Length: 202
Image 1 (cartoon, rainbow, N blue to C red):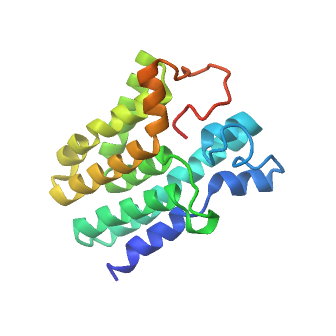
Image 2: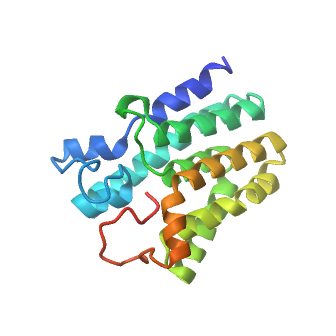
Image 3: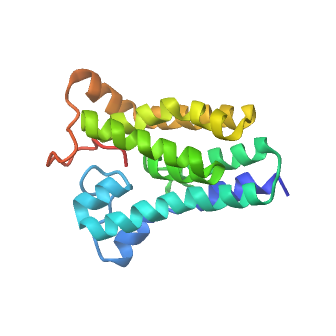
């Protein structure tokens, strides 16, 4: 049974909340409007606050639900961590949408809550603190992911889960490489800037 949980996590992660929400609410396809990124930030650009909020919650839930189920089943920590990785991989490279997904922050945060509710609260608190301090959504997300392994070690004590947390962070950093480039060049728009580029952490 352990072997099937990461597969289930990947398939659930591959469900693109942004595309489904936009289709149901008769909004433009987020892959062809705004930044072209199927995530909550771009849905906010093309459709407004309500569809963006639904997308954010959906993306977080698809990370949370499979990981929480794996945790509740009390399977070995390695398989719980692999399930978390699979959920994020599904969001980044969805099977059902030509392997072109979002940037994985909401799904990652949801998966972290599935691993440990306290780690989830800590990573959200760090995101809020960095956002308020620097006003860069992408920087706040990446900074939170740098601290994530420490949060997971403190709250779970499992080196297997910590290593999986590092792997997830590496995947999300890779997906944000364009944001990192803009941050280094001083070109990344701050939170609240009215720009339609692929600039935030969807």
